[in-house]
Image 1 (tube, rainbow, N blue to C red):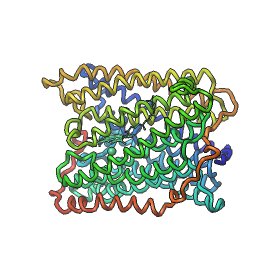
Image 2: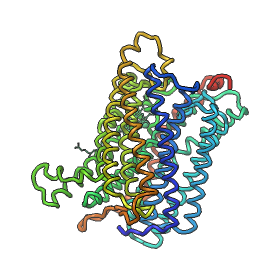
Image 3: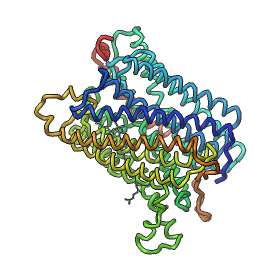
Image 4: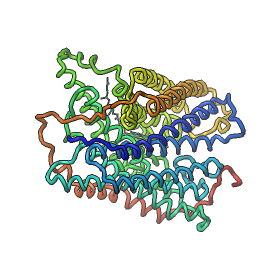
Length: 549
Ligand code: HAS
Ligand code: CU
């Protein structure tokens, strides 16, 4: 795969996304700390701060803002490195950045004013100020601009390289952005045609089930939108970091294609306990959900194979000798690897959640919170951190020094310990019935509280360790951005084996894959959505939080 140097102008754009990422990490992390403390029942939030406001900042800033900024910035850099960017595209890149940033500021302002405490899922009939929704819409519009640029980047490259297969990373970015675009259409319909007119006062009531269904049509691909950039690093960057080659270009592409197909027609697995959706359609979507195990296990297999072949090529022939020789002291490898390990229990939890009967045990308990702190907040975040340790110095013309590398190792270990304690506490408390998304005062006084309160305290201990790890990460980011010595840090992109078999051409047949994706979506959603619209009860009155807006 050919690699292009990044120009100074490009680096500036990509770096801007990183600044927003790490400011978000600090703010969002602080909110997380407040939450775990509040939920022990032993700490009252100061200055009369509302728990749900804090929770909304946490979810929106970390789940939506941090992730999206990091992903769009990282993906731009991958495209710049593999297919290049023109000056005009760069200008539009800045437009996407500013549109996203202005949107973020608008939404954040409304949350801080207490007029948008509706959590990151903004379930109706909870109602926020219209500017909150307008802000989030702008964030999405900014990502659409970025997606259009990415598509154009690949298109121009293909035109110049007739008959050649696209670079693997550019292919992966394109898949992720196609998935994102199709998914966000659902959100756009919900916000523009239902929620916004209602929040502006043009409509008195809202169809709760329809807006929630549209949210989860978007919400599940959202979690894969977070995951796929981590997979990009696992498939195509980590092999280079450990001194190896890509295991199989074709397999990597196939797994991304499968993610595209099976990400969207599965939103009902978040709505298994909701009345108003026919159980048969829930069953169909659960089956489609389980399909994702296929690309996931392909990924696990492929990673293991890369680790093993690399070690064996270096001459370690014993059964597990190759394993010992992985670069354990290199944070660029170590952080994502720990992320992979945490993805195993995270994924198992996901399969439990998706199993309809088991879902009734865990739904709306803090178990779910445990699940997604293993997946997005560890597997994905540790990989993003691992990327940051080389990407930021590369963009800033600095180097990752041994001391920052050591700091990164400590930071990763702290993250692993903190998350182990916190998420174990969450899973167990959840099984005992501790609710999620609830301030302590909501469940204060019940007999049941005593059975899980110890686990809530464990969560607070884990959460505090995590907050220390966040401070270390922000410190490392500042060091790498402003103080590390000048120099050249490598942008590690792995190559294919010299004798790799050719990648089947069909994998780049966009019309086919997008066609199947759309067909699956229409199959899984058309009839149930018609049902929902036809049989909806009268719309619901709004519920403004805090009461009396
Ligand atoms: Fe999930 C809820 C089902 C994956 C995130 N999920 C959530 C929510 C979030 C989230 C944020 O079916 C909460 C939403 C809310 O606010 O209500 N999830 C799944 C399933 C998967 C899954 C089936 N989730 C993720 C990922 C996320 C994420 C990824 C973020 C990035 N999830 C659910 C369901 C709910 C849910 C229900 C709703 C629950 C409810 O009731 O509300 C699957 O994709 C998981 C497949 C993964 C695996 C693991 C494979 C392991 C790999 C690592 C290889 C490691 C190596 C190293 C090679 C099967 C690939 C090994 C080395 C050694 C030495 C061993
Ligand atoms: Cu899901």
